[in-house]
Image 1 (cartoon, rainbow, N blue to C red):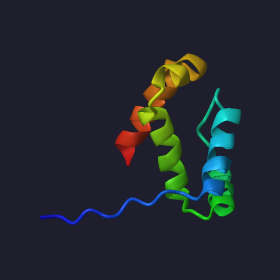
Image 2: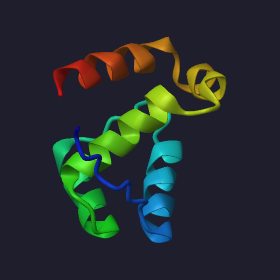
Image 3: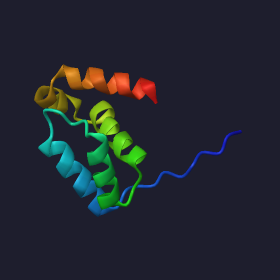
Length: 86
């Protein structure tokens, strides 16, 4: 039997920073390495967690149709390609 790690939510500040980034970059929501490092430092999380947050927001958002209509299908295609690389 495997032990599942306890899920930890980001702080309210971290969530606000990441959401602000996401919504201000809807046309291209994939941050560069430098931006990921800046976001991680601002939020007090790892660079990997920033990427997972962005991918999760694109791939598993409850309101997918809203994200698709704003960002286009290419973002979902890129999301799935990036998630397969991890």
